[in-house]
Length: 72
Image (cartoon, rainbow, N blue to C red; front, side):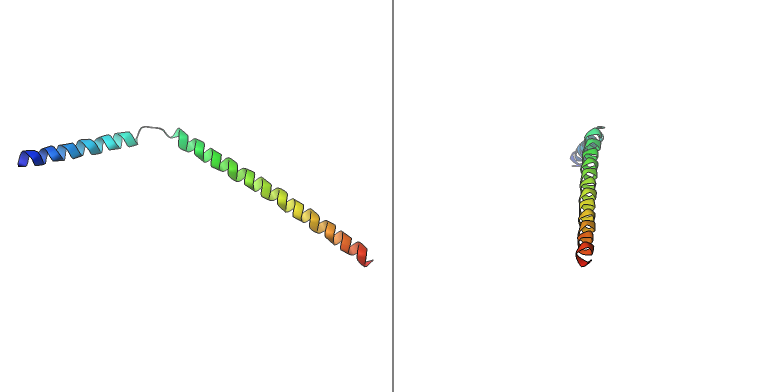
């Protein structure tokens, strides 16, 4: 009974050790690449938003100018 309990403890310890080693395989590059893709997408979205903002500001200025011309 005691021998099977010890074998079970050893098996669990070996499996946990292998899991820890497999988790530390050093493949951090795909995560870094995914992060750079996310940052690139966010940067592009920000640039598009700035372009839309400028378009809205230009349209508002043009509308103000038209209103001023029509009230004269």
